Image (cartoon, rainbow, N blue to C red; front, side, top):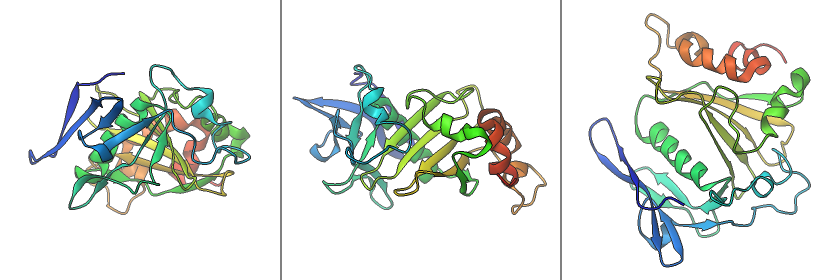
Length: 239
């Protein structure tokens, strides 16, 4: 596990929001800050180990666990007015891998703290429509990004919600975009899909225009990645 290297988290104004870094303290690993409440738990139990079925697949964090990049539990969150903080002791998400946690913290900082991120609005899609295309996406390994994506980040919340973020862009792109399917407790069949992007809105396109018209480069990547599901998300097509 990589400990010591770091990524500085800064806003466009230059304000420093700490560093994305792992610290080793005796037998403990901490993230962001070298403080006890910022410790992460390696190979934690799943929040709901006895439920009948995981929304993505059969306990994928254990089934696909990587010894060199194990699942972790973290209570770290961003709190407006306070910066990086931690949730209550009994709260905290479980991430499919340590790298999932670190990458998701980067996206949280980008979306919540750094201005310029736009969302598509959430669309609910039955995972079985169009031949189960969405279901196949969700039941693959939590470490395998969708085709043409650079990364995937997967988590399960203590309340039972499960989510993924597939990063649509790479360092070669002038913006960052990702698509996030998620499942709430008791809604295993229905998947909530949201797209986020830092792409600048197209010139001359009305603010209330559809997401695909305002952010055409992001929409093109979404169509490539989501395939049969993309028209439902982007164009409002009936399933």
